[in-house]
Length: 193
View 1 (spheres, rainbow, N blue to C red):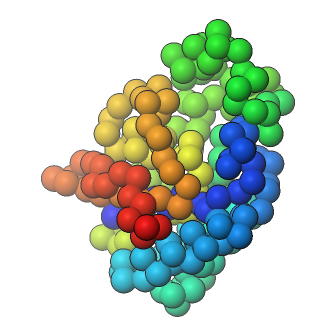
View 2 (view 1 turned 90 degrees about the horizontal axis):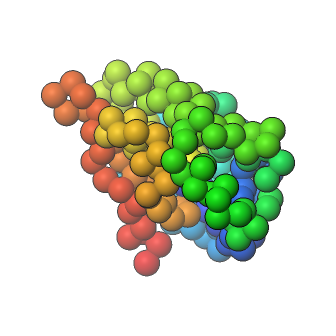
């Protein structure tokens, strides 16, 4: 099973900015959310905690790995989508026509950025690799890679990602059933209550 944990809050995602490869730190609330994730996942039986290389995910991963007595592994396949020239831009500044193109074309790329299909390929490769064992792996990552993992598990088109909302510090789960990937849980935030 793979537990997909989104990092805690940053000022940039709190403020509605596109947050790709820019690397803002967790807010005080984000640190608290990471600690709650760690407490909630302490009994998960995980044998690995793998994180995106960005600081906000690594900080969240350390809070999760500590109670499990594990070290954090870094895997570049879990890094957030590259928004290129739009990184750090308010979502509200993206013209509606551009949003329409982005939401319907998995090969659409922001200027100097990465497509949804590119994210899906790299994340799907990691998921396929990690689901071949009976081990529980916690992948600490970002909103776009989590959506890509879930669409991969569902066998859904990449553009389905735009119809999902994944909260900060949430947990989603994918596993194998009769040898095929499936979604076992989505956007769980009970530990934050």
